[in-house]
Length: 430
Ligand code: URA
Image (tube, rainbow, N blue to C red):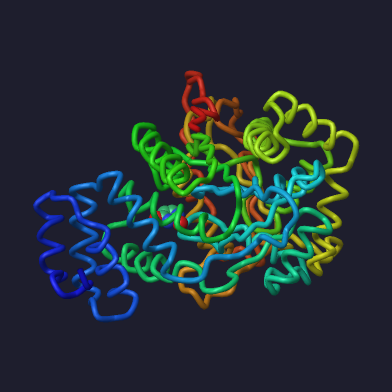
């Protein structure tokens, strides 16, 4: 059948509305037509909403991933010697794990050829965080990228090549049509980009909770299982780790501040939750890259933090990409926010706190907005901690005190009874 002869977009929308299964030809017709412009925003919006409401079968999901993956270039990383392991996070507040895991894994000889994004909504992006290091460049040619991975096992870039243009266009439409929160659409969006960026094996941190895109464990489980199946269908090994995003990861939120926390970690000084997350994701990545058990992997990761090899690798990586760590700066004004009552921190509204950090300049509202790298927050207390009235809850870093700082207190629930915090790692799905 020649596409277009017997297919039209209205029939495709109607089919999905009636919960019928779409063929690969129909999916190809809709996606490619939308990328080329023959299918209009309003038609694609209707189809996306029908998918949101009626779900997709596994066959449809595999077909959609494949069509999106081949809507643009697919990176050829075959010039990198050995296995390439990638890591992805579905996004959270204070999530700086990639900046720690990259050098840590590279110090064990695991190849990490990483393509990262900028901040999205209330969550920060790895590219913005690393660009807070003066001089650090996240753009390079494919040749420079592969050479750097061959030389030091780790390179990190922003966009390279025209990968998955279908996702760029469809994601922007989903953002403004209430169709972001759909498991098959999230799974195909993430996996088409991961498959296009050329890694052999992938570990995905699926964040769950109030600060994440996926708010409950059942949905996160569905998403993780679907991504593992998409990977297997494409011949790639995928491990998904379901982790809690009901409170920010670690203590530092904001670009340069998060880099500072990564440096502290790699020098052996860390918060319990960051350590637990990095060890879990890192053990999965090292076991895939080095064909060793997760226990052996964890031992080697710990050794390389203690013996300084992980930090040296970070230093080497930053220098290779032009950064000068000595010039990393916090915003000059520090304000201490104190608790108005005594009690246990029972909950942090992570979404709201992420929004405040975005509002003070650490994130964008429009694509063209300039990031204020030095602003942010350092938490003095985490969920489960006890705080006294007038004791410091957090520090905020600004250029000027130009906001009502009291509203930050509304992000914290402080109660008289201790509530056991949720575990950080919920489940591993392979
Ligand atoms: N991240 C993505 O890349 N795509 C989604 O749809 C959601 C989160």
